[in-house]
Image (tube, rainbow, N blue to C red; front, top):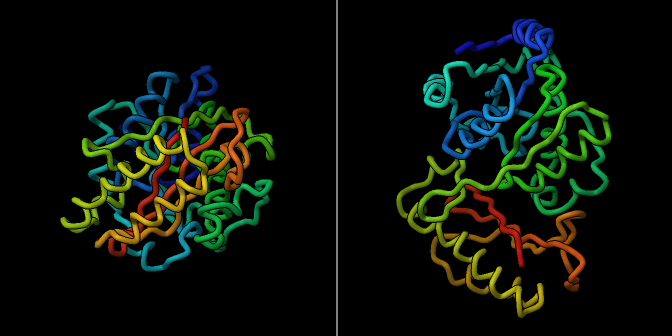
Length: 282
C-alpha cells in the first residue's frame, strides 16, 4: 500500500498509470473510515484498475471550529482498514498546506440553487468548501470514476452539478447508504456518540421508514407535521429539520406529483453530535 502526502508524488504516480491505460477510481474521504467508506472503495476496486482514497479533513467545509477540531484523525487505523480490502489501494493524505498553500479559503460556487436548500440553510458556506476541495482533488487525482455515498445526497447532487458546470472529465457514481444493524446510517461521527444517544439514534431511521409509509396516503405537509410532533416528545434527540424534497431541484415539495421523485431528508442533534440521513419515498 502506497501513501502519498504531496501533490507531486501522487500526480507522478497516477500519470504513469494513465500512460499504461489504467483506469482510476477515486473515493474522497475525511478519514475515520468505517464500513460505509469501505463499500465505496469496494465499488472503486471492482470497476477500475486502481483505487485511490484521499484522507483529508477539509477546513473550509466546517462552519463550526469546534467540530473541525474534534473531527477524528486516524490515518494509521484507516490504512489498516483499507488493507482488509486490498494491499494495492493508493492513499492520498495531504496536509492543509499541500492542498491550500498559504490561502486556506473556499472558492465561491453557484450550483443553480442546490446549495441553498436543506444543509445550505443551516451550514453557512459549507458547499463552497465542499466544491473547493472536491474540484481540487479531481484536478490532482484525475480519476475516471469517483464514488460518493447517498447519505450525503445533497452533496452528491452538488458534486454532479460541479462536474457538469466545470466540464470535469469524471463519472460520478452514487452508492446506497450503508447502515449499522440497527438502521443508523454509518458516519464517522457515530464513534463520538455517548451510549444513551447511540441507543436512541436508530429512532431517526425508524422515523424515516414510517414517514415513507405515511407519504403513500398523506400529504407532504401532514407527514412533516407528524415528524416534528414525535421529535418534540423525544427526550434525547433534537430535530433540526425534516424536509420532503424533489430529488432534482432539492426544493421542498408543496404538492405531490406522480411525475416526480421525492426523498425525505433529516438532520438531528444527539447531544452535540449532528446526524443526517435520508430515504427515497414511494
